Image 1 (spheres, one colour):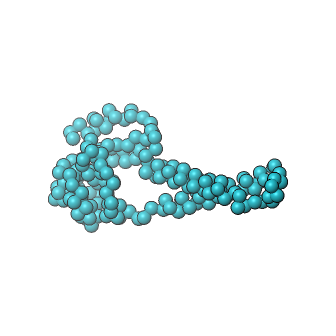
Image 2 (cartoon, rainbow, N blue to C red):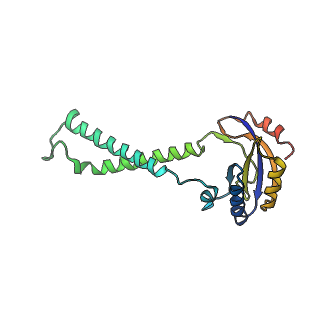
Image 3 (cartoon, rainbow, N blue to C red):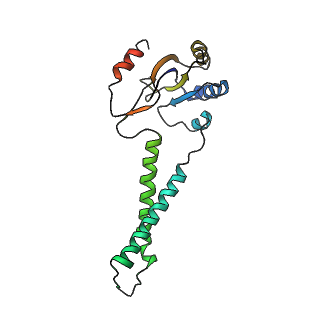
Length: 194
């Protein structure tokens, strides 16, 4: 993971945040992410994110659950332990529907949950940089990645013009790491002026 410099803007109202996101997108700056204290409906569309493909993953996991249930039950009742009871045939598919349904739902639910956690980097033990201490409390925080082609002063003035309550720069890793806080001192040294 690379250590990068970010321009951080804090907004105190989502009514101010939405026009700011539109202005940032139109200006061409690279938006790293937006952190909000609660789910803001329509923010993903305003940021330009495409619709999630999680429902396709759920369908695939459900198919795997159905295949596992039918395959395993049919193997048990037709090959491994074929017992005739009550006059039922060995391949009694209608009797297997409840178990097949339950395994389909189980595979889809667990698979989608694990996929969602991995893609959003919210697994247990994952540590990410916190751009503002109140980003999960009462402020909406936007982080814009600064690179060699962007002027820091220009970006800061631009963010002030969008109605940001606070504007400052921070240096941080752009990704996440698993289970360690040993970089805390390094972040505190880099962001001492904040």
